[in-house]
Image (cartoon, rainbow, N blue to C red):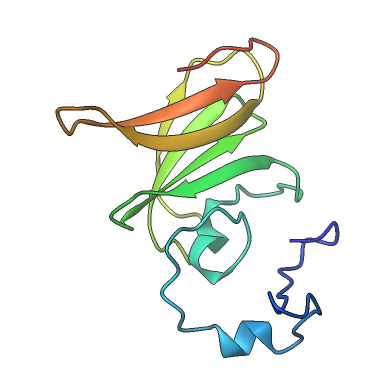
Length: 125
């Protein structure tokens, strides 16, 4: 993703930009999803948001949930893919300011967790 909020594709061998990357990869089963842009995550953006309001995105291991970290002190969970605007979500609060990152984790017994890091509070939840 570039500063103009475009998804750019590059050839890993030559390092040159592949301008046909979007159409060439439209049905690619990606191993992960950490981009805040793209058809599968169109619905994660709140109304009137600018391109910097979502700070981090991560799809769950099983590919059914996407977690977001935002500038409004929230961690949100959406179904994945989430292509529809104004998609339903579950929201979690706790950080005192913007949330800088979010990630899925699993403990030794198999329980799944969402971990988040805060900006100003420097906390891990």
